[in-house]
Image (cartoon, rainbow, N blue to C red; front, top):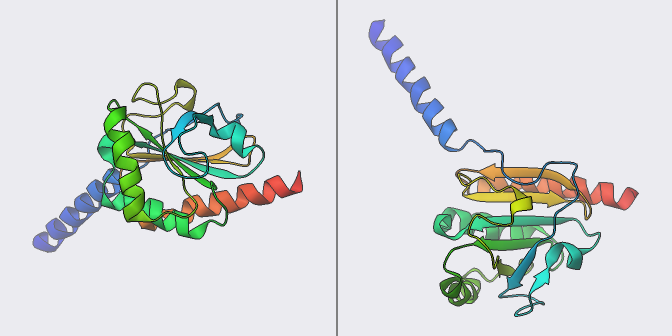
Length: 186
């Protein structure tokens, strides 16, 4: 009986640790607020090579902004981005923004990453400022990926993933679909 109780307790502790590792952090602008300016340098996509404010470019279109610290980008995050890209319908429905201190290396890396990932709807961009990202975007340094969903005007959802992979795409996609419905009603 004691052995079963101890085994059960160990299982609960392990599940709590795994759950904590995948827990979200509060990262991104507040829900309900206007989407802040996002000036980036697109390295792939229609605006390639032209510094742009993607929030202004997207106007009133529902958009998912992915802010990715370069040092956390790995295969699970790549699968998340690739899966999300395959689920949206138009170019730039998803905008991926690399946050890095080494912008020169990122400018070389992202076009090669695009050749591998073959994203159809997601431009890869680099934020030209501090590696912590734009201040108004309130990126938590613990987040390996921050997904911010917009209805085109306001933040409608945000996700600060400490760990992520393609299994997290449905929640972000559902938030984007809800934002699209809200935008159509207005």
